[in-house]
Length: 63
Image 1 (spheres, one colour):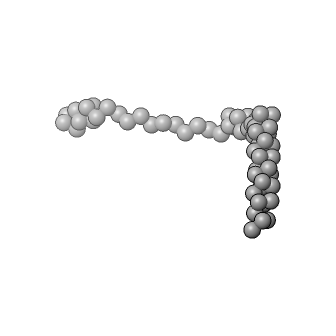
Image 2 (tube, rainbow, N blue to C red):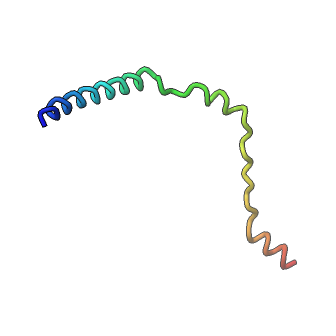
Image 3 (cartoon, helix red, strand yellow):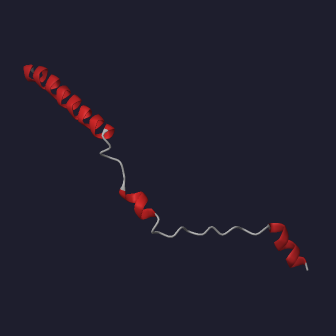
């Protein structure tokens, strides 16, 4: 049981260390994506097909 009094503070110190390392990596731009925006222009955008006006369709069917 006395081991738990040693393991809890050690695990908290390790967790704080990993948290500090993560914050430092985010601030220095480690997770910034520089590759995707330059490649995105190589892919074609999907064309959006606009639905025609429903009134025009019904008028054409009546004629």
